[in-house]
View 1 (cartoon, rainbow, N blue to C red):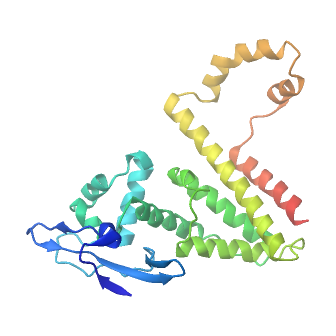
View 2: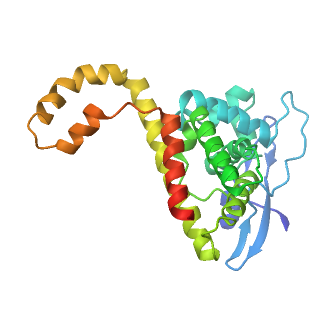
View 3: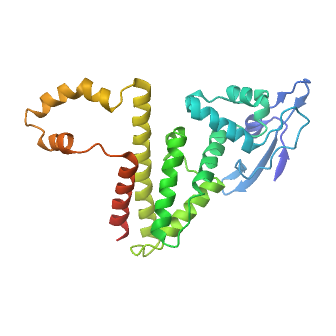
Length: 269
C-alpha cells in the first residue's frame, strides 16, 4: 500500500521531510505492508526505485551499493558514512535517502551484493560438490571484502541473493544420506554455518592484525619465540609443545577445506 506521509506520527518520523536545493518542502513516499503486528515499511528490496530525476548524476540502489562496497573495502565499515558515500557518488547526502532510509538498509544492500557473487558458485550434480563450491566461494568473497565477515552471524541476511544462496545450500544438503527430516536439515545447516562464520572471522582477524601491527609470522616468532621456548621447556605443556614444534604452518585455504570436509563427513554420514 503506498501512502504520502504528511510528516506526522511515528511513520512520519521515519520519513522525515527535508528541503531540496530550491528550498521547496519535499516528502518521501513510504511503502507500507500489513503484517500480523500492524503496518510496517516494505523491505528495501521490495520498494520500487525512486522516479528518475533530472540530475547530473543518475542513481540506483545497485550503483549506491557498489560505491559503498568500494569504500568499505578500503576503509572498513567504520570508514563508511553517508557523507563520504555521497561525495564518492558526486551527489548531496540527502539524495541518498531517497534510496535507503538509514545505514542499516545500506548495509543490507551491500551484503546482498556480495551474496550475488557467492551465488555464482558452480552447481554440481553431486550435492557434496555443490556445498563445497558454495562455501569456498563464500570464503573467496569474504577475503575480497573483509568487512563482510563483520556482518556474518549478525542480523538475518534476507535479500534475494542471500536467499538464493541459502536455497542452493539447503537444497544440496537435503540430499545428504543423513538428512531424514527437516530437523536434521536445520541442525546440519546450522553446524556448517557456525563453522564457516567462525573460520572466516578468525582468518580475517589474523590478516587485519598482521597488516595493522606489522606482526607477520616471522616477526611474531622473533618477538615471542624466546618466551614461548622457555615456557615449553618447563614441561608443563607437552601437547602444546608438540603442536608448536612438530606442527607445520598450515595453508589457510587447505586448512579451511580440510576442516570443512571433516565437519561435512561428521554431520552427513
